[in-house]
Image 1 (tube, one colour):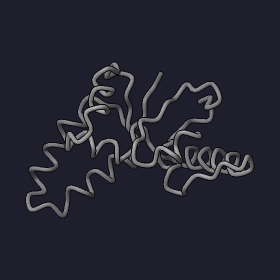
Image 2 (cartoon, rainbow, N blue to C red):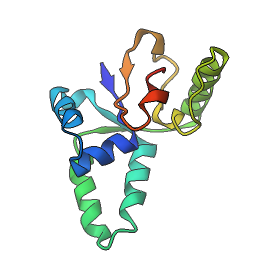
Image 3 (cartoon, one colour):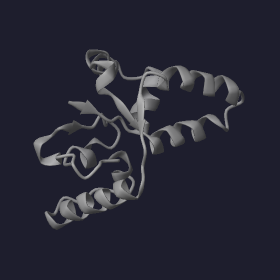
Image 4 (cartoon, rainbow, N blue to C red):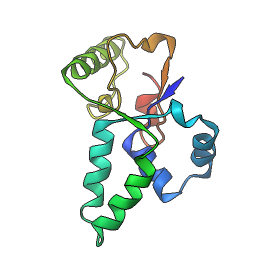
Length: 129
């Protein structure tokens, strides 16, 4: 199973604020965790207003180094739009920002739960995907 953490999950892990999430993170094989390029962008952007952006980017370099980063390209945008529309037709509305955590190639089968999201802050939206 591949795990795709959202930005809030990464921030919580970086700040070490949720023991249950940290334990779960440690229980997963590091090669089974991938990031989305949008999540990387949001983390980098969040480091900028710090009093020491260089230090924050160094922390991010260390945190991000073991993970592959999946691009969010036009194919991903189309697939996310399809997933969101399908969920809305089924009466299961998710927020517009939740799809950005789904940079999925069209061959990923969501119905078979091949991909599981590490989401804690917006879990109500993401658990339905």
